[in-house]
Length: 276
Image (cartoon, rainbow, N blue to C red):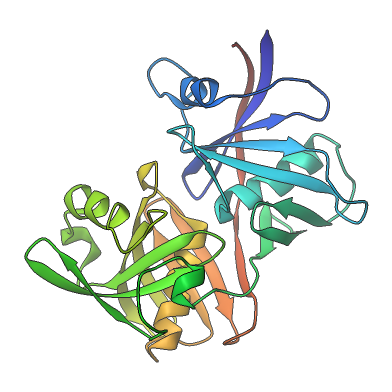
């Protein structure tokens, strides 16, 4: 069959968005991998699926699949593109949209100039809920990686994140370290590996090696996790500009128990159809 799709990106983190409300198709892992393949398919970091909600008080169901075909719980840059997609395609006329995800309900708020604000919910710091193997919650943890011990923060933004502070993100061998941290046995569901350089109390640089994808130009949940870790350590203030390879995000967090608010850009690249 022919499947309609839209190619989008949020700060360079790119997506194939598929409307499964007005068209019917079952996308299995092999179809996801084909769509995501940058040589033989369309190419993307994640495939985003728009589905009808499972509850009457929710507007849509939002599903996320990594390029390797695995379904994941959350994607912040994808959530912003999701909001823009359903408005542009007249699936809703609302500017505040409630969306059901694998990790709960999130709210998306469309702003001017193609900016979207996402209430990402409160971060999870308890190790067993991340999940992360540690005897008790702490602001940081030692992580043995080959012959080195890294000091990391462990945070879930609906998906697990490791965050490591570094002096210079550009000098990190992320292609080597990223997979080692992603598959570390202390993260039983694997993890996203973030490397954060603090520029000031209100600005950081960040690179993220995403679980099941590799390094991406931007990672919204990774930006949230980095700011939560930095605030928990007393390094950052409550609103931070996060500089990623593909652009900038604004992340705000008022502290424990409060939601993380992410604001950033979206862009539609092109529309097309592909036979699957």
